[in-house]
Image (spheres, rainbow over the protein chains, first blue to last red):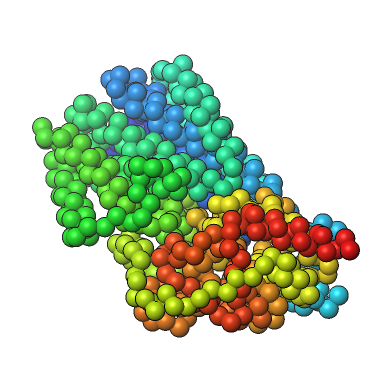
Length: 138
Length: 473
């Protein structure tokens, strides 16, 4: 489906090569722009409590470089040193994928609400100052 | 359906899952779902790429499997580090991310150059390649150095390193890298092009080092966030090189996350990006020489415990000192004991407390303190005048009233937790030395402030024992 949308793009013939050499940079720029906006909007809503797990999660996500590393490593006609560079990149990315997701989950498991009825009366953290007054009275 | 269409469809689903993954991080209740969604997205990305690779006749599968296995073997222990070491781990993984991007960019350039592939080295692609290796390798050395500083490795200077003409020489080097980049864009197949490329790599590696050495510990949360953004942007650049929309999207999500966190950190310190990177802050400004005459009032743990028992509201302000001393579990004991006595206990968390964004929240959550009691600075400051006791544990600059009043202070204008507005302040401090930013703290000299000198874990432990002992009588 991507191909039909850009069938007039030069370099289209190279599509079989996994996209190498295609010059569809306007499309790429559009995707970049939209993804950045989505990123800003989504990240701004992330709870401040979770900024450390957020960073370890985005660490794991940035290991998406594994995609490029795979394409490079699996290239048929590449000289050995290029394959080697790709393999080291796969190693680095996998390290991030494994450690990033695992440690994020490990941290998130630790975030717990107050046990018992206290949590129900307190509601969301934003309203806590109000609830705080109530608790002082007790 | 052609293999390429299948690959793109898999990428499409993967992209949506990455977005959902971050979306679910908005609430601690749904956050773990976010991790699963991220794992699924990454698995799809790998499956999709392999599908494409197999369809176009790939090779070296055993080697690739080996690289995956080795990465997993190294990644697993890295996920088991103590939570106080999370900033170092994060910096280290930024380094891995940067290196991966840099290596892929290098491989692509030499592959295209070797093939004399003029179409693949179109100006746009070379620009993206140069951006990719610049950001990738800069992130690599910068993050290694940041991790070393955070880990307090001996051969990496802890204090900021500054020298004359530092910014000018850095800018000159940057200009040189840029000039090499432009030359490469214009003549990607010139005989000297590989040398120019290697030159950019070396300059980028040097840059990472030069950008981090003038930065002190207090600026680490900002620096880690900036490096996070760079790692993401290098993945975006890789996406442009490979014309891969999944890479662009995931990289942009990572980049915007790092950028937002850096902006939050900068605002929390009242500094600009530029100032953090080029400001070299941290040399002790010994302007307040008369501070020598001021005397600390210290107090015993017994009387601190007595005052806290009588309080209605106790606000605890944790800082990096608490993390270093691993005092969070003892803090939890104090929290429990006070609550049992009917005292309300809240934690006031400054955005830059600790060595990375959100560091304190994770440590306190590890000690099983419910997250509703972890308050942001802006939420708690209004209640500070009602606080009977503020207990400062290993925090310094974030409670320094000089930020509000002293125009000459390097931290002037930085938003702070209004600990000085509470009725009584107890501050636990390791030594009488000034904080990381090297600034004297007026809070400690107020009439209502009492110091408890000693290791945070020991002092808080004593406090817990006193509180427990009294309830036994």
